[in-house]
Structures are given as C-alpha cells and as structure tokens.
Amino acid sequence: MVVLFPKGTPNQVWYSPIKHNSKPDETIIYSMVQRLSKKINGYTKIQIYDVASNSLKYIYE
Image (cartoon, rainbow, N blue to C red; front, side, top):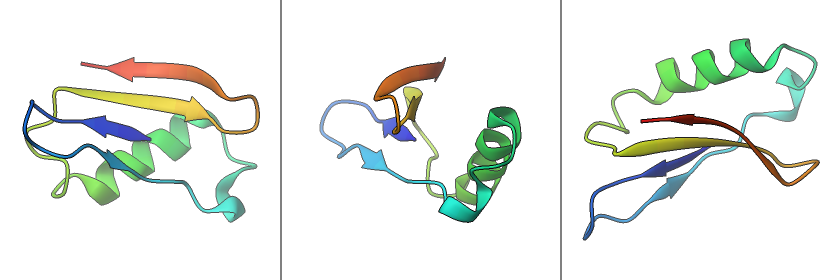
C-alpha cells in the first residue's frame, strides 16, 4: 500500500504480512486501512499494488 500525501510531505509505503496472503484482497485492504488510519490522515491518494505481479490493483482518492 502506497499512501501519497500533498507536496512537501513524504509518501509512505506499507506491506501486508505474508500470513494474510490467503485472504481476499478486500479483507486485506480494509484491515490495513483500519490499522493505519491514524497514520494516514491527510492523504491525497492510496494505491494498492500486488507485489507478486508488480501491478496496480486499486486506487482510493
């Protein structure tokens, strides 16, 4: 998960623990956003990538 912030604020990257890989994507994304919600205040965009295929899966604006 890549969290993009307004210009001048560093972007942040988080990875889902491997033990959650068997869960549906929606469950993993929801859990990550809930767990990190206090750290991602003020974001402009959240991008979710599949690391195995190196592809963009979701964008939240």
